[in-house]
Image (cartoon, rainbow, N blue to C red):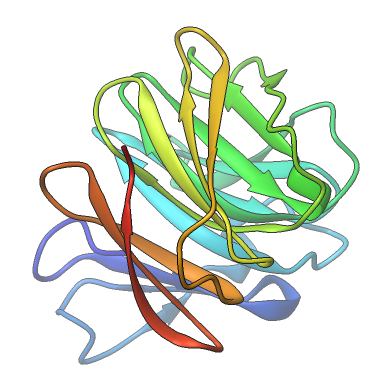
Length: 188
């Protein structure tokens, strides 16, 4: 994740988090700047405005405290792994095992479960507009979730695959990537 062409973070297993201020020419460890005594894995990093979130295990999302210059643990009420986090206007969503989705509208201070209607792992997510997100599932489905109304539309693409990533395009289209290659998906 990059804030601009110079500043960014990369996250990974066993609590790995590195920061760059020179566009990736050099990296500095931030592992000591995270409230992560159990050395949980970091799965995803995302931001909107000043909020930067990192998805992790045990239902924990880490949020950057700019004043302290450290990531603080935020407990969502879930106990499983989150594979993706996507910041939204004023909040974020975190998703993972067994179709689990949690959302916050108050910058990560409180979280609520959102029903997805599926039991497969959610592997990636992307904001479509101010209140809708699209999520890719490991079993080849795409979910469009309206966070204002807590409604979910499950889309079964004509050519499903094991999706690991999703990118939104214009005109309510997306592209998924996974073990089966690249797949275009209509979100209508």
